[in-house]
Length: 303
Image (cartoon, rainbow, N blue to C red):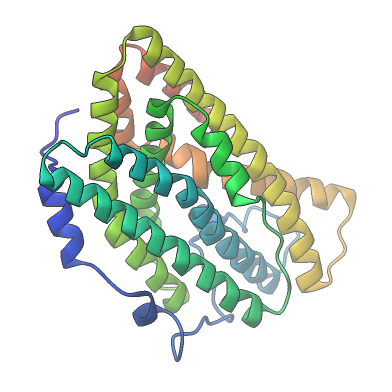
């Protein structure tokens, strides 16, 4: 991949946009439940034919809750992975170590932010929303795979975050300003993480022979399949949360429509949008001839 990323530049850029949790959540910074949280391109509530506008707003907010919860969940395997990578680089240059430790510190901050958001959401929304997990079990499964595969999953997530904010959130003036602020501050720091993880992927790939790379690509797809199963379960939880929040009782046909539309929405949000990001595909293509084409062939079912 042709780029000009450096550890020093990423660390310096992150320091310029650094923020504190208490400055962006709590006090008078509250969620507005009269507005949607998520852009329609990710929530896809309009694709469910039988819902009223108010029901779509409720589902949108349930999806927003799940969105930030799932980010907090994946960051619980990103954090130990980055720390392990940093530990292996103790004898490398100081700028690399500074950047990786800052990367890890920001991920820890994001985990705390999303836990704080979930507490406030549960208090304000008025209905308990179930979620997949526990996060440590998901982290154990992901981290049990080839390190290059894990780095690719993380890179996928970092570019996915950029795509969501830039393409869907930034210009959407209908969203709740507080939820949008959380997404903006998350994006500001993740912008540097995408660059750092690109460098991590390149470093790990340099130490792999062809069989290692092939195994890593297979493991990346295995992790994707595991996460897809989790997304399907999350849709079932969201269905239950929606029924509790609205009191609506659905026919079998309506439940099937809800599940189909929302599973594909979750697939695009967390799998397709990262897997098809041009920068992610460029990194994959630089690792192994034919690897990009393999992902491009698999991607349509997640879009």
